[in-house]
Structures are given as structure tokens and as C-alpha cells.
Image (cartoon, rainbow, N blue to C red; front, top):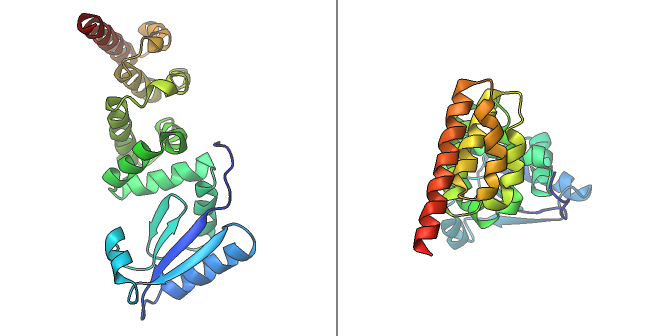
Length: 225
């Protein structure tokens, strides 16, 4: 779990005639009353259309809850979980990421993760370790982590990825090995080398390919020095 953060602030966008907006607003007011959120601002997009356009809002209710963006009707229970996610609960944040990726919002999640990797990576790694997560979400997590690796943002997470190589699930070990190979960091070798003797042939193959990639990266770095 991430270090606990202050209760998140909420900004709810509504419009006249919206059937769900009053329900979401009432739920958020209850969260505000018991301290689950730290502040609540309600924006009527009919009065402030420029704000809605700037955020790309096409339908209401639309909610910004800390770093999270939520569309449509959500129950009070769901909003409480998302408030925990925004405050640093890794499990709740992982569920949010799974929902977003399953809905096909990979580009938006990639943008957020790249802007705040320390906030999002623990949740991404938790999803990577969960083979029961939605398949589309797992594919999205892999694509997102590959993008972060290409930007050089995974090196500081080698230890966390390395721990996944000890998973009982071969699919998780294989995914971790692949990502370790993308870090370009020689420190990943200590986690990859034991996988060359893994009981699963796919894991052994991916580990070997990852080690080869690290060797190529090192050779390219020395050649450019």
C-alpha cells in the first residue's frame, strides 16, 4: 500500500435535467460529512461550459476525485472505494485501473501513470500479479508498463518486478521476466538468471530473451560511450 495521503478533494460536474447527478452529489455529500473526502465542489456545466470543454466532458455526472476520473452513476459504496484509492489504497487503486483498462481507456491511464509513476506503479504491478483480473485489463497493464519501460521509468521498480518472478503462477513469472528485460538495467540480471532453470519452458525462454536484451543494451551503451 502507498503512503496514506490526505482525504481527496472531489469536483463533480452536473447539468440541469441529469437524472443521476443528484444521487451522486448526495453520496458525495455524505462522504464529505464523515471525512472520506476533504472537499466537494459542484460545477454546473451549463454555467461553466468552458471548463467542461477543457476536460473533454461529454456526459454527466462526471467526477474528478483526487487523481481519478469517473463517469456516470456510481453507488456510495463505489465512491468510498474510489476515495480510498485516491488516498493511497493500492488494492482499491488497482481495481480502478482494472476498470479503466477493461473499458479501453489505455491512453488516459498511460498518461496518468507516466505523470505520477510512484502513485500508479504499485497498483499496476498488483494487477500484473493477478491472473484473475480482466483479460483486457491485463493486456492493457502489459502495454502500459512497456510504455513506461520505453521511457526509462521502470528501473527503480526492478525489485518489485523481481519479486513477481517468485510467483507460483508461470504467467506472472513470464510477464515479470519480459518487463525486467525491457528495463535495460543490469541489476535485473539477478532476478532473471534463476529463471533459466524455471520449471516452465515458456518462462525459461522469456528469461533467456530478456537476458539477451540486457546484454544488447549494455553492448550498445558501451559502444556509444
